[in-house]
Length: 76
Image (cartoon, rainbow, N blue to C red; front, side, top):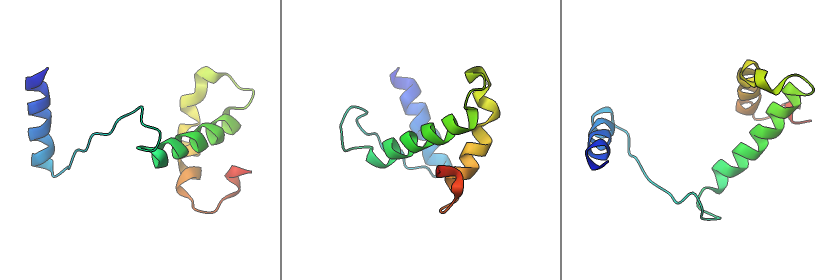
């Protein structure tokens, strides 16, 4: 609702966050994020492997660490 958006924008202003909206359906608008998500999906899939997909949360930290390293063997 409108009051929630106003409250959220006030909160963002108070803590110094500039909030920009983009269209989720535009092909080029979030290209960097989409590429990151694609790579992250692949890395996390390698960690989960044949294990239970319901245990994905156990591998998120490892995949996140792998993604934060600029050169790594995690991508192989």
